[in-house]
Length: 196
Image (cartoon, rainbow, N blue to C red; front, side, top):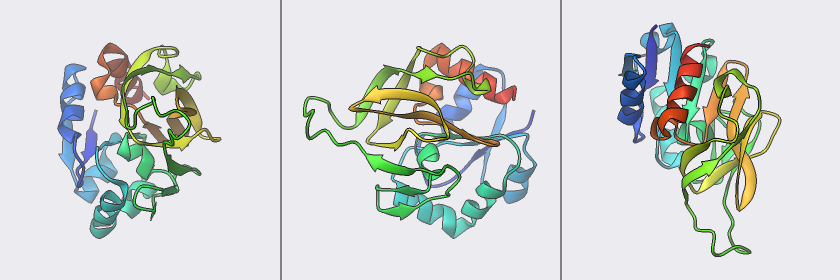
């Protein structure tokens, strides 16, 4: 199994590498086009700010590469948001894989609900193959922006509003939460993705 983790200007890439190691999967962190294109599975993780991350992807040509991939691709956190159409964070056009715009949480009517949404929360998941065995389970979130519920939603979470906790369109999958920080449930999601 040949797994590539896309290396770009975003944090948290190495925690994904270590989470894969824990489930017995060796992955390579790379921005090499051929290595990414020839991988069996591709993971697009990250923690960061949308407009600067998009600028970096465009500067390297990785934006065009990612949308052209045919194998299963998993976006995580900012990776999920960058796979959407547009983000309010930095008012930037993103990759457009998921037909939805990323919004900032608005807690004006619920000031006790802190932003960012940070910590463990439950997800309601459909029967998508990467979410086998995770409906109603707790996973770990850290984010101020979210993708609203849309036709690509495969799991929801409720914080201030009900939003997309995971998305899927064709060979592209994405989670707003961090599987690599979500203990056994996160490892199960990574295993499900690797077994696609």
